[in-house]
Amino acid sequence: MDKHDELKDLISTLENINYQIAELSRIKEELEPRVSELLGHGEEGSKSYTEGRYKVTITTGYNYTLDKEEYAILGSRIPACFNIVTQRVAYDLNKTAIRDAEKYASAEELDLISKMVLKKPKKLHVRITAGV
Image 1: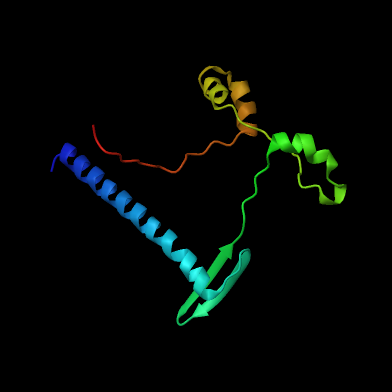
Image 2 (image 1 turned 135 degrees about the vertical axis):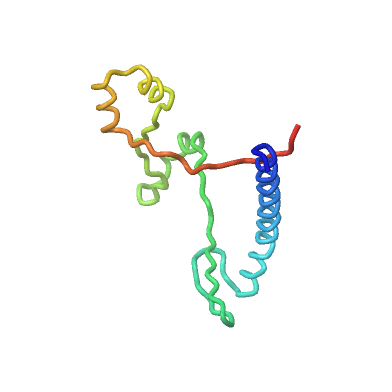
């Protein structure tokens, strides 16, 4: 089998696996709420149940998001004991500047950057979509 045929087979296999994963995920999302309902699990919290030879752990809860514009207007009216927001400083790395530095910075500048920024490879990800 030549390189082209092997690549075609591998891509086809990966595409088939991706379809199966998507289908199984869809089925799983349909079954999980029913299992939770049958076990009588509440709306929020985590609990383990023993059912026959299975241990089933169910975790439920809510995701909260803040409407920043509304908070800016209304936040000062909330009593301090109910302050719902903790503000923090965030640092975002400028990847373009890092790549430019890797190409053009001096050894001394690269040494400083390497002491502040850890660089490690991402997990390999191959995405297969329908062909042209």
